[in-house]
Length: 236
Ligand SMILES: C[S@@+](CC[C@H](N)C(=O)[O-])C[C@H]1O[C@@H](n2cnc3c(N)ncnc32)[C@H](O)[C@@H]1O
Image (cartoon, protein in one colour):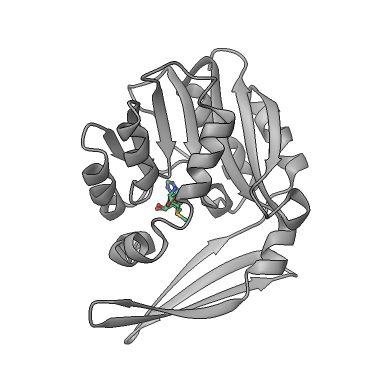
């Protein structure tokens, strides 16, 4: 099946690529900078076009990036030329490089997991790649955030080409869609909300201890966008 992020890599890079970067940096500086050594080895899970990978590398860290879009990885490798990047599915990846000091997963990426089983499998995979005492920092979007914010339309221009983008949230099925149309092409991304209780339960099951759940700038926990910091408790 076509990976929509591959087909839309150039659009992702220009339209959404920097959208989360300042939040990603802020969360890292708030929660992780003091917990990892200088030159730390960081797994950037769902690295996308590598804007945060590039930031990590410019700040002296060793980057390993994982993403299921081969095309986005091309951008990421350019932004972090010293990094190692792998085209893998987060639900099922096993790299030779393990023992990372920390992993991050940003910008609704974990909300792309459409079942609890996939979420748990991903937590276990992340844990298997961290050292004991390593950290996992990620954002997760809750139901309230999709209800409040995931509705609307916009257009994006890429060279000569125009894209129509529509965000919809189905409150019954709890599926958020981002539909993109251009000429006679149509793509769709799906996300689903997570509850903090379920996130904590899955983290614990996978062998993490939750150290912090924090609001993400003005979107506080009640508004449904949350940063989670978890610590790897035992060997994976
Ligand atoms: C909204 S983007 C976020 C990218 C990047 N973290 C950022 O901040 O710009 C979601 C990313 O998750 C990746 N992704 C979605 N499902 C995935 C999966 N099952 N395994 C690995 N990557 C996945 C997509 O290819 C995309 O790069």
